[in-house]
Structures are given as structure tokens and as C-alpha cells.
Length: 433
Image (cartoon, rainbow, N blue to C red):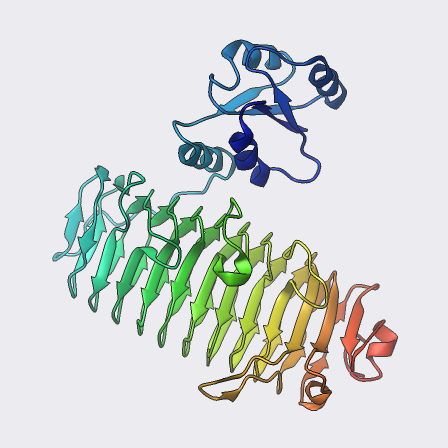
């Protein structure tokens, strides 16, 4: 069992520690130079296998750490500030594998970023230029630089750099570019304040084979036509729960795209949705992604149009949620969506289609219609169709379910009612058989 220990004057340390706990992880308070008797008794009762001490020697002395070390291995997590303590905690407890090593030779016309740490590095990107990092090239915002690559330019490529500690505000990116044919690949982007990568009004742009983790708000934001997001690990974004994900936080939030492909990504442990398309998307393809342990829905397609969601592995998403919220796959006020070949296990809810009064977009009213859910395996939660618009239209809108496999206790929503599998098959006779 892991036990967390903080000094009784270290309230902020306790707040930092909280995201690294689950409901069964105790947080115990000690004095700087004393372990109260009640805490000693609790430690003996718990028999910890690991003790994490949050805070420096001003909070918990080395002598107390030595005493705790007689009970279990101890790791102290402390930095010069609350911000740096949070960074150390995430690096220690949420390790992320580095990106793939680049080829030895950079492109002939590349701007070379030498190995080593480059503090306060910020560049107005130039059209057609590749910024190529030697192995070990680090761009460090030092907690006082707003962004690294910025501006409006076409054909920019950023390849194989580590980008960390930039203070870009919420809704802005540590990499924040506008333009077409942009590429960000093989980068390790972490511990930035707002969004890791934001490509805005950007057609045919790509985010490939990156590790994008521990942003304080959001991993990826992209808007445009023909985008490709492939082969990335997107993890632990908004891990301190500083931003309400219902506003905009978590793994990704794509905005108003056409023909977006999101393929072969591993999105996990984000406080918010794992993968999220919101507002006027058409021609979206989600395929072969692994989406696990996110606080919000696994894959969320909202107030949009056509999409295919296929062959994804979606597990343990959604911390809680009434109605049919926080599903492994959640489609909200969107039409012409086909969902098939997915494996969903242990999500708060299974597959959810919902209709609300959300208005209209660039292809008409946002309605949940012409959606097909077939040949998925769904284990855990509830599935079906719900509405809160005072109309039964969504149940007569060609939303079809067939060929899916469910756990034996699965519950279903349809026609403003809830029921078991036998009841469900009155409406969808080829489903769950």
C-alpha cells in the first residue's frame, strides 16, 4: 500500500499530492520534527509498502524521513516552488517513455537545434522551415516564457525536440501555429501551462509520434481540413484538475474540422475526455486508438456531423456521471455516425447517443439521427439513446443498433425508459443476441 505523508503546515503539498491518490490512498499529516502518536499507530496498522513525502525539509525534516524509512521505502517529492513540486511529482509517479530516436542525418535545409537545454527559446516560425532537434535538444520555458514556436506560416515542421515549462495561458499552445501543411513529430511536450500543441486554421497538418503529457489544461487542439493525429501518447493532461473539463481540458479537443483522422494514439489518464471532437466536424475517423482511464468520456463526438468510430480499445473511462454521460463512446447531438468493431470495458457507461437543444451548425440543426452502432463488444455501464428536449423524435430518427455483444447485466435506455436486454430487444431485435 502507498501512503502519502505531508507536513501539517503544507496544505499546498497535500493539494498537489491528491491527484496521485485513489480513494484508498491515505494522506497523513506530521509535524516537521515529530510524528504524532495517532499517525504512528495508523502507519503500523496500514503496513505501507511505499511512503511518499511531499514537501521539503522545511515541512518534514530528514530525521522524520529516516524514521519513516524504517517502515517502508521513502521517496521525497519537493521542489523550489509549488509548480516545481508538481512537476517533480508527475515525473516521478507518471513516467512517460521518450519519443522515437530520429535518423542520424537531418534534412538538408533544416534549422538545427543543438543538444542541450535552451532556456527561454521562442521563435516566430518561418514558412517551409524544418526545426530539427539533435538528440537531447530541450527547449525550456523556465516558467517565465509564454510559447516556443508561434506565428502564421505554411509548411513548418518541428521534429524531435523536448518542449517544457512554458507559461502559455489556457486556450493557447506551447507550440501555437496558424498555417497549412504543418507537422509536429517525435516531440516530447510536457509541463506547459495551457495547451501542448495548438494548430489553428490549419489544413493538411499532422501531429505524429509525439509524447504530449502533463499540460495543465489540454494536450492537443487542432482546427482545419484534412488533419492527421497519429501514433501519439497523450497522457496526464490537466492532471492537477485545475481546469473544468466540461469547458475545455483533458487529452484533446478538436474544433470544426473536415476529414480529420485520429489513428493509433494512446490517450490515457487525462482529466477530461480522451479524444474529443466538438463543433461542426464532418468526415471524422477515429480508428485503432487505445483510450483508457480518462476522467471524462473515452471518445466524444459532440454537436457535429458524419464520423466513423471503429476498432478502438476503450477501457475504464468516466469517473462518474448520471444519465448516459461519461460513456466509453459518447455521441451528443450529432448525426451520420457509424460505430463498429470497438471493444469497451469498464467504462462508466458503454455507448451513448443523446439529443439536446444545441442549436444549428454549418450543415443544419445538430440532431442525433442516422447513427448506426454495430458489432461492438461492450462490458460495463449502460448504453442506448436519451433525450431531454421534450420530443421523441430521436427514437424515430433511424438510429440503429445490431450485432453488439454486452455483459449479462447491461442496462439500456430507449423511448424514455430503462430496461434489461430482453426489454431492449423489443426495439432492436438483432442486438445483443
